[in-house]
Image (cartoon, rainbow, N blue to C red):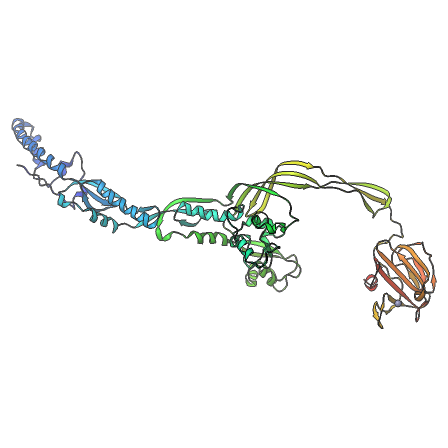
Length: 578
Ligand SMILES: [Zn+2]
């Protein structure tokens, strides 16, 4: 009986190729194939060779049959993990099961898709039962040789990686959290503000407010009170979301956010306009890419931290135009930054004295993501009336009179509004149906040249002289005018154009002239020695109306000059000395 010295050669087997030429390369077999080959080459000894061949062939045939039986019984597979042989199994399925078990157990441990960094490969081989690797041993051989790779999802914003997250759902959660403040408040959620409301001992009539602290914006406030930043912005139209300053008061309740608290619905009667908003599209201005990616478990990012990072954003340059009275210190407080930061950002500006109109560069954080919302909005809009001017030569040039009062019209508007982080950037009117036409206002405009005696609106000095007594309290009584002293006969002039309403003697005033300037102003000139105009005369600005004297209650030649506006005395000083 011919026995094949068939034995697994652990070291040499890598080179063995199973298939048609298996026999030829199996050099360790007791059969000498070289000799068989050699027999064929002796062509001149065919008969002898043929005899030999038959003999050998029959031996080989017997041996082959015997081998075949043995071969199928010992058929096995050498298992490779990557390049490394880790055992022998009878069937590939056993190894695949062990591998799958490990993957499954890790997936449930990590609660996510797990990928092992090395794959299984098989080489057919032969082995006796005792040479096979046990299931447990095979598993441990795999476990000790692999490192776990997890399949995460990367989130890239404009090509920059924010992080790799455990699942697509986690990435969606992040993006939804960023979008949420700009979407209408969800009705089934109890607004947190209600708790604040009921905590008050008395039911609050005024809408709840929040005072802005440094670093806060509509987004952070919305998050704090579980409100929609969009609703907050709409409830606070007077606040520029880009220019919130510490100390600004934000109304928290209005419109949709306050539906639950009916007691406070009368919060803003001025803002009666009803807007029907349907969000058509929500997206981001930036390019957002999500890709599955293999990574190590330890390098996965925390979604909550990612949300914070997006909101904290990157520093972007903005400018602040300096207004009167503003200093670096004030501006730093306004934007929650420091004087040092402002100074280093603005080396070209003199730090000691900012001038109104100076542009101060500010580096303020801008969120990494800009939520773009396309909203379809339905509302009733006012239509401004037109104004028709009609010339009227019966009135002076400076006169105007409304003949027909204009009335605003109303229109039903359907518009698409595009907002970036809640700030309106574009509005397209889709449809506009006029409900009420506006009524044109008709205004009569005077064309007549102004008379010389019409008031100009500013005063000239009523005389030449020194101030002998100012306006105000004097010896316990009120001195309602200003005294200008000069010699008797000095000219007294009308301070502005107008109509003489009194010219005559009047008690302690002596000879008095009163002029109505027909613009709310009345002036009085007292203690005159001689009057040059009479009641009813029209006088022009600077026209001489009297001569100075000391008539009435007076202690020397002077003009007592009074100015009244709509019947009440004013200090003439500020009207004549300017
Ligand atoms: Zn006086």
